Length: 249
Ligand code: 3Y8
Ligand code: NAP
Image (cartoon, protein in one colour):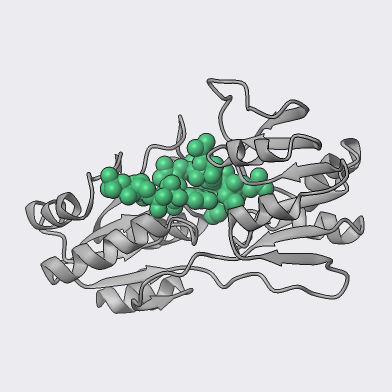
């Protein structure tokens, strides 16, 4: 009988959890514990790091996990690397449920950069009004470019004031809407957006808003992840688990 561990934290992970719950298969969804109240799930949830590769491997063994699904965010590179290593160490089969990277369409004004350091470097120069749509964890890096006005958006209120001399903070969680993000960019007279190439739908609204308002976007490329089986399709994951997607879902 399958016993699935889903490494979660994304829209796709939630969709998979709902599909698996509908089949009655045993599954646990795992969160890192990054935010105060992660979205409720229709399967049991565990919250917190495992303690590295060896501890993740030990978790897989002691909980008799039969299938590991890495449905984490494309920028959760450490978790994904640990999942590959722990799956290899234990022989537990692994598949990644991910989403394709965004690609520019007509009207997009993207300036691709390889990583967060590249995004900081790209902000050299005259004062701009920048929406830093990166969440909370990497804001401090942008103190190297204090000349700008920054619009920040965090999931939770911060425990410390962000180290940017001129910023406005919005506390909100996605998925976001195009109308909402268009109004946000307009209200704050944003003339530049910085974001990760997250892909998917939950964070895409700001791209459509930037396109509509002819606002350029500094687009951070995804980190390189280790080789692993992967799909963008929940039904493929269910078939991989050996449960036909046509039955019961
Ligand atoms: C804790 C668990 C679902 C999942 C929803 C997706 C969409 C909405 C859009 C902007 C971009 C950002 C951020 C974002 C989005 C989804 C998805 C997504 C981006 C939650 C969640 C957890 C997190 C962690 C959080 C990070 C932060 C990143 C905010 C749940 C709400 C910026 C990524 O305060 C912190 O420490 C936040 C940390 C990692 C990146 C950062 O560096 O700050 N996500 N986000 C997960 C855990 O503990 O394991 O409550 O759902 C999930 C979601 N956030 O099921 O509906 O699928 O990507 N999350 C980015 O894309 O750049 C916001 O503001 O425009
Ligand atoms: P990360 O840098 O790749 O991982 C750092 C450490 O956090 C991991 O080594 C692991 O700790 C722990 N961890 C990460 N994801 C976990 C999970 N799902 N369950 C249990 N432990 C987890 O991860 P991150 O970028 O901080 O992302 C953390 C969470 O937020 C993930 O669930 C991810 O899907 C979600 N998220 C991230 C982003 C983003 O922009 N990075 C965006 C949306 C959602 P141990 O080594 O101790 O096991």
